[in-house]
Length: 214
Image (cartoon, rainbow, N blue to C red; front, side, top):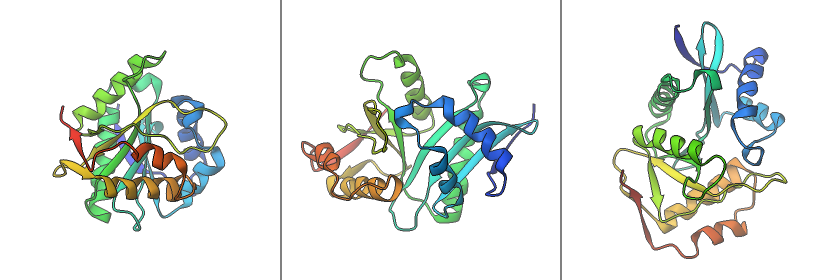
């Protein structure tokens, strides 16, 4: 089984449909963007969708936001086909995508949105496994910090955490975190810069937030 990783071409509609088939069953509806929004992301210069393929069949994907306006990148979504998980595809996708983005656009902190594993739920085991996956890749949790997803739909988003992938950063100052949140809310999700959820996330935080060491 030969694994290859490539950038999803804007004109490759069949490739987009294969990617979307995995996307649509990999995340809770409260965390999903519409098919139309994903198509806009595919054609935006601020996004790259990386896809993994086995024998010419799409087996996983990774979507990274990389605007020149921001001081960070955002790994917005990553998933592997349910029949291909635990085979190393996810870690290879992550390594390939980050190396490509860093080499083309420079090294900046990569932020990652994940469901919190701290609260009990029907998907608790899945959330713990996902957090362990990112931990092994060198990603660290901002602590203490509870992240509120800015998705626009009628579903209630689950409690979330924000991870950071950067080899040298050990902490983030509160004003820098505020800038990250404002840019995520406005540039990624189309919300207002003064969205009340940003103040809610920041209100009780200390001036310096450490990255939780694993």
